[in-house]
Length: 241
Image (cartoon, rainbow, N blue to C red; front, side, top):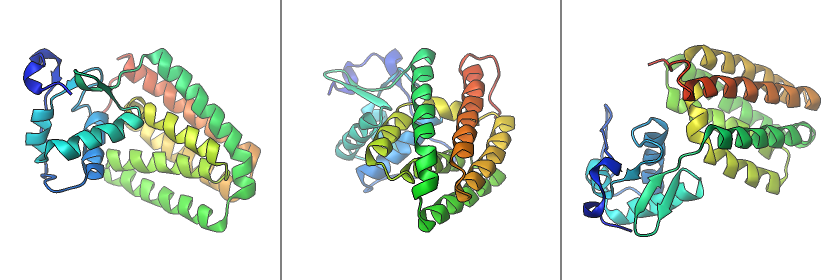
């Protein structure tokens, strides 16, 4: 991996410590990856930019070993590219790339809906319901990052209810790859409130084992969210701050 001194300053993303920033000194690569994931989603590490290892080690208080392990974790999720002799770079997708990924995610959830309703256990229903309660609390408290994480967990849990490991694996990988772009739409408050109401309907359809209804609700939910996200990414509407 190329040293930071060899990187052009214009191509290196800077680290701005957010309010409440705490050192990750001594923490594992998993914890470092979680912080970097939040920084990518929050825009502190912009898409398409190379990352300065030096600035991250200083800003996060970690050594290069857990940082580079964290880079590998995020590379498997599709959030980073590690380029030989050039270092790590935040992944960048075109709107067309994300369009195709969203088509796939909608299709995967459509495939999962009916078997999820037929095969889900009482424990799985309870887990999704508990996550829903946590997500609503995050929305009420204005915790966008927490809301987004739990939202993603709910969708993965619903797919997992189908008890199809191959389906779950593909969904998890593709969802991670476009996480950055899906996050953008959640920063529009009106969409955020609508999404919570849509999740209420999704939860009820799952609990009542109404597979065809769940399939259509999931499809509408994704398309509504992606419509707003496309407008944000195209700068046609501004996210709320």
